[in-house]
Length: 185
Image 1 (cartoon, helix red, strand yellow):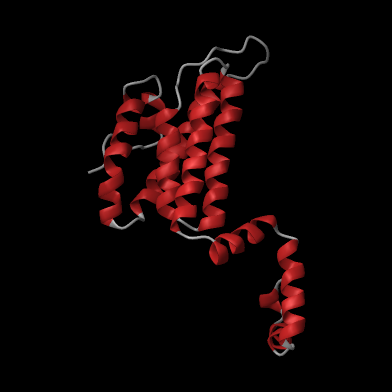
Image 2 (cartoon, rainbow, N blue to C red):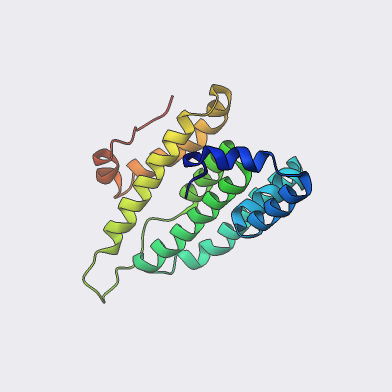
């Protein structure tokens, strides 16, 4: 049941006494972990906490990089998806589009491309890894383009480094097929 479908319910909720509204709000917030974390961030944290969140994600990625180089393509794909999921969660909590693009660029630039092929199984996980990687880069570029031009200027060097890395690797064909630009100006 959506609240927008029941306009009378919306009016009734706004007419509730403050004490009852608070009780209902706290019960609802307790059921949603992301909303709880978002409210904690919005009400109790400041800019330094935002930077701490970014640094924790970067430190976590840095800690996983040496292990990532030893994995096969299937295991690496799982790890990279978890890293990107951390950034997506960061965005859901902080609503910071700049931090999201910055963190994704950091992760995508740090990830190596060469993995061992898995001898078991019928799927080509290196191909799946490449597809996932290129799609993630494309999504990041779209989010990058929505930022203010001053912020784009600050992040463009890192993005161009990523694009150079892609086009000078075996993912160049997939990047061209995915219509990734060779350079962002």
